[in-house]
Image (cartoon, rainbow, N blue to C red; front, side, top):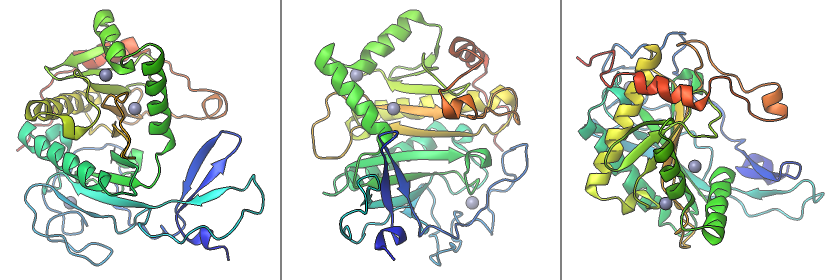
Length: 348
Ligand SMILES: [Zn+2]
Ligand SMILES: [Zn+2]
Ligand SMILES: [Zn+2]
């Protein structure tokens, strides 16, 4: 059998001019996601069956240390592996293109307390996570074959999170994936044509317009983007032009922690639920090139539409033609602005 089908690789889609990552070895992933519809915070601070809680044995066999702050490890069920066999010969057809995909997949536990989420962690606790993200980006990004470091979090079973323990993931890859590649190209093109920075200019336009900005602190702005697709999609943008986490001052890292705390709290308060989302940072690729065009930002893509259980589906016209939304970005921003920044579920 072609070795390619046994190892992580990416296949080229000539119709869409895009890649799809294939991880055939990644079976047997444990599922500890919430199965109930109403996602209340977990009642227990320690779950003996959770593979992310301190001291517990993971499915892969390793045991977690009795960690107190943050804790990261290489994913036992990584979608990408550091070592991959080289290409095994020419493709059968130029329309059946694939190439090896190498990478490192890590899990970052945000806190030892199983019951917490970013929304219910304190600012100093979130700052520790920001510092850990920064370290991981630096360490992984400095490896000579790593061209991109994607930090992200899937929150809630609705978004496919396999475990409610507060954690995120970091996938570092030997290539720049399509989403950040497209955004980096757009920012580079803007710099060359209009300059100096697409997102600096965009943020200034949103601050002038005002109606889509949810809140700002000294260093970050949270807004529902003009082009947002998900009902309560949010963009968190640094107010200073910077390209990656390591460029942030201590004050700016505190500012990011504050913005994440306030945004996730508003999200939870919106439908009085532990609000599901996928979030992640876009920053400079680590392809050892200069990226003055890239402006650091976070995307939040939450699926909920009308309540804790009514979600938006991307189906039909949206899958086949283009995204569509009902609630306008202006209305979404207004509703998030109206949410309090005290969490509805007080922490014991
Ligand atoms: Zn846990
Ligand atoms: Zn900028
Ligand atoms: Zn982006």
